[in-house]
Image (tube, rainbow over all chains, first blue to last red; front, side):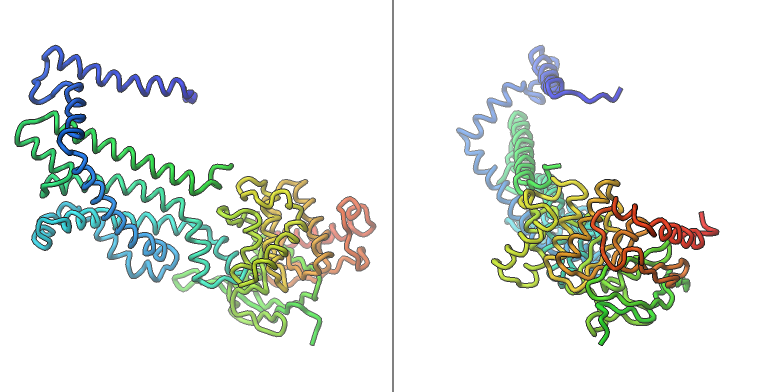
Length: 256
Length: 263
């Protein structure tokens, strides 16, 4: 019943489910079962995507969006990695920050949009701030939890080899937890994309989300669907990039 | 000045269990570990032998009494007392060579000397062919060899081992025990080894300190006289010696007395 599935069979069924999805879509649009204005045919969506990139400079919007995600996510990591590791390594540091961090996790980041707009106006700052707030508290918590799972024997071994606390953190705890940190970053980057689209839809004139809101005004459903596809593709690409980084940076995990 | 590498003076340890409760794990233990000797701490589970070892390492603080190494009272962990644990402690992100160099590196030993010493101790534990492998590519016994080489390369005055072969299968355990005799002969390292394995205790020990349980006290200090002051290099030889069986039977009786009333 729970026999594993071979690679060829998985490939076939994986492609099959998508073929079915597009097949239903093409058929429904072709036979006029759906309103063409609301659900354009897939071939039209792909043609529009092509047109957006090569005739209407959509690439610029995409780059702006990528830039926002990377900038905000980079800042979040720059704070969360050292803080999360220190909180996981030293209970007294956790005691200081954990009550603060865990409270913020329960505040939905989008609820800050009105106040962020009042504070920062409509430039880049409120978008970066939203992404930062949306990601950082989860990232800190994940990294702290991973750091706590570093085995006590590793720490004690380092201590009996003559390490001081600083050396233990930098040379044992951090390298030991690093693969898990990269995994946590990979998970949270997906969340950063979600907040990016929210920020761009609510208050922006540039970026993928803004393009989609413009398209809505002119009833260009094909452009909206293009935006969705591009966001999905970018998310997938970044995920693959992190997976590759993980494989290349930690060869010792592959060898068992 | 005595010829003791390590002196345990009236050491007690009480663990706080919270809500005003506490348990006395170790009660007024005292013994010496002679320089260049192998001392085995033996006893049933719950006798506090691991606690005593951890206090020697400085990983626990005695509630009363003191532990003295080379004239200094132990205040905390330090490179003069290297420790090998039962659980695997190899640093998975470092090759075998870099694992063995780790202690020397953090203590500022120059790269040339570091490499040379690491190579020597990797050779001593028979891992030269695997020097560039990652620990995850090695068997359990080989990983413990890495831990032993890493600790010894750091040049400790005393090597502390907490049931180091407990997780290994039987034949690997013999080989590791024989390796330790070889290492002790070649490096003249003082060792304190915790075990509950009688055969291992008799094979390795120049002196056995038998601890009673709940709380841990020294029940008896035993020198395996039948070895006549010589270490025996292999186990077949050990078990066929006159006097081996008598000592093992004696230790079994001690174990049984201490285990009485417990499951």
